[in-house]
Length: 453
Image (cartoon, rainbow, N blue to C red; front, side, top):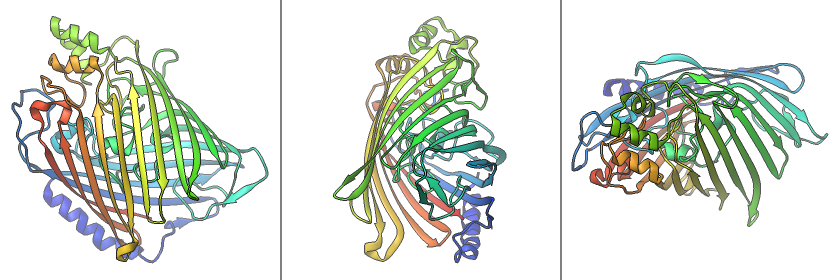
């Protein structure tokens, strides 16, 4: 997409948004169904950086200046009541665009709304299509203050309940949530800030999967467990669920806490994925024997015939309100890193922390300033594979002088109207793809327009 498209899109949003400025409610609202809408346009550029080399056919981010990398997503969120305690959700979506260097070269990729494969022209798809059932475990309810996306049931929900969701959805709809760092449409853009980077969470290239999620919820804590499909090819659209061979399970325990009478949340996550992913040792052997077939499997360019890949991961996620305007957050993640990354991105260890500040003190109560720092790493097997010249589906410079990938991101989001936000984003990246020979740093600048109602 061109720079002209970005300008036209942002101007169009700016003109369109005021017509919704007086009404926060969905444009279709009824006792039995609702409809919400979002449109997000993001443009990014970087000014270039020094690198010792750029090898041909590598997955490196370009060290030459890039601009005009634009993404656009537009989504309808449709909800319909069914029988008692049940609702159906359907989210048609149009998405398109390409990231800087086609989202290659940085494990903590730079725009959570872009993908590494696919036609950059906008295409329509069904993002989500699932049924959700509430089972009350008591008679005490609580009030739901506002109509919300993916909530269309009565305005009172059981405090103690079981929730079962079945169909197509994103794992991030249910797991690893964080009030300050979770949504690239309104918060941080970097992949390793929108979710725990070391959680190779099961998803197709656009972030969706199919399966079942069961939740046990009460006011003090919640338990969640899921079993869902995984990609047939690394980071591709085709998905499969083969019992014992290709599947992914995630468990999360969420605990509400209070510090100085301010709310906070702790989340502990465990995941296990079985897939067709080869091991990195197999990849090293394939480089020695020039086995291009297996190397194409690891890089996400071919389908593996056999199964046997597995990955276990752990995650910790915390958020805490400090004042009415200030909140802090952090995540830590790890996976065993023996088999190829298969769904999300090529991070085996990660840690990040940050803060979020509302603009009340300068008379802009609905504006938000946030900043966070990330450190990403990979396993010894993963390092050896990249050093030998291997490529994953998102990184691989053809050689590796290993160093932790470090990222700082900050953004300022200004609400110009009730339904329209304009954000400026900056990212500082050191050692992209874990390579000190191409250490940068890279300075990435972004502009985001977002409308929702």
